[in-house]
Each structure stands twice: as structure tokens, then as C-alpha cells.
Image (cartoon, rainbow, N blue to C red):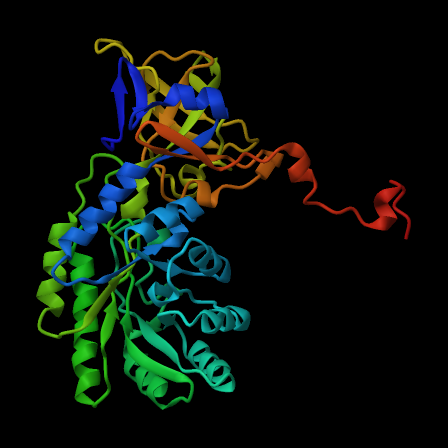
Length: 426
């Protein structure tokens, strides 16, 4: 558990603010982030690479709240974006376009135009058709787009299959065998300037061995391309570093940095990274209230958060540590319990047979390590109100995304005129 979330006088606090007090003011469920924890993680990552001064582009998809983006912008971060919407968020949060990288396999013509309008640092191209389209769009505007060729190194990240992105069967990047051809094409096309290579093999990577193998393939390409007289000034090494959700012991940034220097130190290339989960995951929690406790063959704890608020358990079978907001006695007996939400889906189950202390209706519990891929993936399924987000700094807190009300939610729909009277006329 992040040191930002600790018990004081038997009550869980975020930094110096009682979580129970925030719940009383905001209502449950809600996401809660610690500015101090996010700052500490960013500085830890930056310090590991301090001598190299790489460009650290926070992966906006992990948590796209503009307050979070503004915090990282103030620390010097750039942004890795994968849609026009994320690009707009990054710019609105004050991240300079010269520190923005646009990734993603399906950039539309409009999205490429948006990137050209903003004159961002780099577009990571992931297919030959995208490269040709970008060249056409940029040349027609009298611009030159800086591109990196994202390669697919056919390396298994040894993480969850659904968040692995570097195998040949995955949709991401240009096949390693075609990378040289793609780079040569980029050098020939009007409107395009190839500046380097990019790679990202997946998320929640615990061991460094897969990353080392992928980076080794990138280094080989750098040498081969330079051998043909093609300039390769920089490499974008993506993200992937993780933090522990359970008992795993992931590689530290210092070890990661050491490995990167071993692979690229002699090549004199500028480095870029796209950390996301590592920066925000353990700086956030989801706080929820217990609605009912069903006793019987199983102890089933029904909470007011659901899979629409935190989808990772339903989507990936992910497990989050769960702790009560009121600290239990050290000698309290634990017993198995299922923790479930109210959505009408069996998959709306956060955990089964989890050893938990006695809990009662109205008690608050917290899902830990929920700062990444939590609120950003939430929805209004079952016409549930979008979960709010709160940021804590020291002794103060602020709502950084308010909970919608039902009128706002219903107003998003439009009933056609022929149904307005309720008779279904044609």
C-alpha cells in the first residue's frame, strides 16, 4: 500500500485527510488520488534516468483527469496520447505540444490532422497505410511530420495476454522483418521525416528479461539503419513498468534504467518513455460503502461500487487489495467473503473467498492500487452515475470530476419527434 494511505487513530487517511470525512462530503463510491504519491512516483522514475534526461511522456490512457495531467505537466512530463480526445486533454492541461507523442494503430485522417495542427513532437506510425496517409496529409499542408516507426519485435511480455502488445499476432506496430522497409519509405516520402524507432510490448511487466530482448532488437535496427546512411536520432521505449498489486516484486526504475543503459548506452540516441500505470496506480484508491451483507453458504458483501466503476476485475480477473476504512483490531478473526457490486451481471464480482474482517452495512472499504485504468474506464452502465474523482494534497482535497446527476445523464439522450408523443408514428 502506498505510504500516502495510512491509518491514523484507527481511521484510514489519504495524506493528512480522513477518508471518512471525504466520503461524508462527496458520497460513495468515489476515486481518491494522492498528489504526493503521484509526485513521488514521477520523481522516482525521473531520478533513475537523471543523467540521460529522457523525455518522460505520461501515458494519458492510464488516468486522463486534467488535474492529474496538470500535476505531471508541472513536474516536466510530456504526454503519450492515443486519440484526438487525449491530445486535446493534454494540450488543455498545459503540456507543450513539443512534449507530446501520438501512438495508436488506428489514427484517423482527422486525428492525424489534429496532430499536425498542434505540431507535436512525434507521431508513432504503426502501419504502412498510416505512413502513406500521414505523408499525403502533411505534404498537402506544406508540413513535415516527425515520425517514429513502431516495431513489433515478436517478444512476449509475460504479462496478462490481453495487455501484451509485442507478439507477432498482436495488432500493434510494424513487423520486425518489415521495419527496415518502413523506415526507408519514411525517408523517401514527402511530408515525413523519420526520426527514430518506437517499441512497447505490454503493460504490468514484472521481469526485465522481455524488455531487454525487445530493446535489443531495436538496438540492432538502429545500427542497421545507420549502416544504410539513415539517421536514427531517438528511440521511444514505451511504458510497461508496474507496481505490486499483490505479492509480486516488480523491477525497480533504477534496475530498469541500468538495463536500458546497457543496451543503448553506446548508440548515442535520445530516449523517450511512456510510463502510465507505474506513475498513478498506487496513488489512487476506490472508496465504496457496504450496502448489504448476505450471510449463508457464503458471506457476500454487496457494495455500492460496481463493474462500471472499476472494470478491471471483470475484464482481466484483476485482484485489488481491499481494506476497511476503519482499522480493525490486530487480533480480529478474518473469514472468507465475496465482494460484489449491484450491477445485474454475475461478472460484477470484485473478488471471491477473500479473507476479510467482520464488516457491516454502512462500513466503508477501499480498493487499493486503483489509480490506473479505474475511473478512466468507468461507464454509466445500468444508468448508474459516473463515479467522481477527488484529489488530496496535504490537508486539503478537491473534487476533480463531479458526479453527474440523473437529469444530466438523461439529457444526453434525444427522443426523435415521431416518438415524442409516445405513439410510434411513421
